[in-house]
Amino acid sequence: IRKSYHGFHPAPWYLCCRSLSGAGTLRWNDYDRPKEFNFASDVLDYWTQMEQEGKRGPKPALWWVNNQGDEVKWSFREMTDLSRRAANVFTQTCGLQQGDRLALILPRVPEWWLVVIGCIRAGIIFMPGTTQMKAKDILYRLQVSKAQGIMTTDTLAPEVDSLVSECPALKTKLLVSDHSRHGWLDFRSLIKSASPDHTCIKSKTLDPMAIFFTSGTTGLPKMAKHSHGLALRSSLPSCRKFLQLKTSDVLWCISDPGWILAVLGCLFEPWTSGSTLFIHHLPQFDPKVIQQTLFKYPITRCLAAPAVYRMILQQISTSLRFPALEDCITGGEALLPEEQEEWRRRTGVLLYEVYGQSETGISCGTLRGMKIKPGSMGISIPPFDIQIIDEKGNILPLNTEGNIGIRIKPTKPMGLFMCYEDNPVKTAEVECGDFYNTGDRATMDEEGYIWFLGRNDDIINSSGYRIGPAEVENALAEHPAVAESAVVSSPDPIRKEVVKAFIVLTPEFLSRDRDQLTQELQQHVKSVTAPYKYPRKVEFVPELPKTITGKIKRSELRKKEFGQM
Ligand code: BCO
Image 1 (spheres, helix red, strand yellow):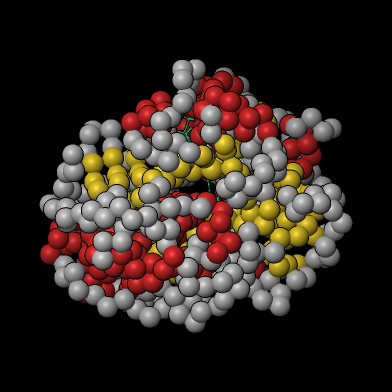
Image 2: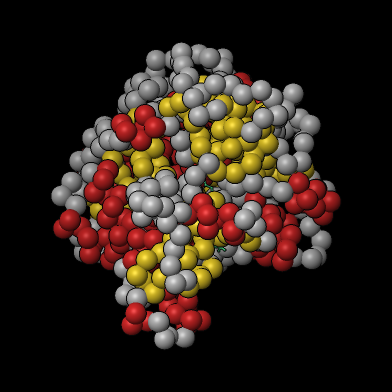
């Protein structure tokens, strides 16, 4: 049963079942650099035309469900219509212009797709962020990006109102809600009244399209700026070989819409191929809901972080034979060979691993149908040329540990980030000879398969979240019990790594109950920054190991955690 959503009535379906695999969007080869590209006009509108000509089957472009039984199904034609309205809301009602920035902090609601495509149509740079963010995280993002607009829900609107006076560039606040709020524009109502006529900008492929905030070892998150080339990359032949999606596929990408994985897996990848994108609102992660959803809906492909598959395997002992599922894809953190094997054994479907970062998008992977080497992240996907390099950018021999490098000279490949915005120093730091240095360690074997080993710095990857230790240390420093802290990665059976804080207490707190204090500090971190960063392990120590110059030796603590000392 198709329900209309927020007053939109479904358009008639085109009942032709001829299956296409996006031949019309395959206009480029891996190394083409077209001057102009716009995902909305070049890809989305192409599929709308295919629908109109009866050349795409009846499956929706977007299929959204929640636990309350609500369902939204939008065809490509509806997506075109609604995203044109969204573009008009931004430019006409909000007065946003090409090049302006919009912070987009939404849960998995259908409007997220309208906003992203609307931004692409109007040339507004969208900056996705997770709804786990707290006021301070949002303030930092709005200030450093000088964002002109923000869009969020009731939950975060009060946080935004509390800091808006400190963000002089912010001129428009858009709310996605069933209720109105003073000082906020009601996006749902505006969309209904906006005109569906909009002329998409003619964006240059290398014009900026999106900014993703990414954590570093030191300091606050950096702004990884991407051009429209990130979206174009999904259309290149080698990238199409990776998922090999068909118009008949229904892809469910479980990533939070705040991450690049969602922008790729919930948008560019499926729609480039004219596939159906499936979304479950999933306000809280629950392996049982995921299992039930895979049973109930005709989902053929599933993309999620390894922790999601791991938690399903650990928490559900019943049958995992999903009726329509053909294969699964995973990325964001390392997958253990035993997990990959157990998933295959219990579900009967293969689990393909991919690797990428906010800076790179999906850079390598085991392409569909290719031999899986358990424990390897597959091969580099052209136009990316991945090599294992030393600290000077020299290519290392096969099977030698080094940094994962992506070649940027003589030509930067399509889809790699443009720069860290307003941060030429950090941008230069990651350039290493002819390569972009990912900072991840790996080896490469004779067949080009890449084997991940770990980070070359203090960044923690906990269940797919990249966490900068300084962000957690700064949050802890705000609590009166904390004289000093060092935050490092620590092993964990479910999340593979978790955040561990070594804490030196201030004299007044030395006699306090340690378990109670641990909980208090964990709650404190959850309340001042995005909760996924909170230290799941806490150890109180009399002092921290330091260098002669007084710098905390995090690596010493980390090695101890992993039993290397
Ligand atoms: O575990 P706890 O219950 O103690 O704490 C959890 C939450 O309950 C809590 N929390 C969440 N929202 C809160 C809140 N607390 C207070 N206020 C709120 N508003 O905070 C903790 C959050 O941890 P979590 O997100 O790991 O929670 P959970 O529910 O265990 O989720 C498990 C996963 C696996 C679903 C989650 O960790 C996850 O989504 N991981 C994947 C991340 C990902 O997609 N990474 C990809 C990045 S892009 C990339 O790598 C490039 C690839 C091309």
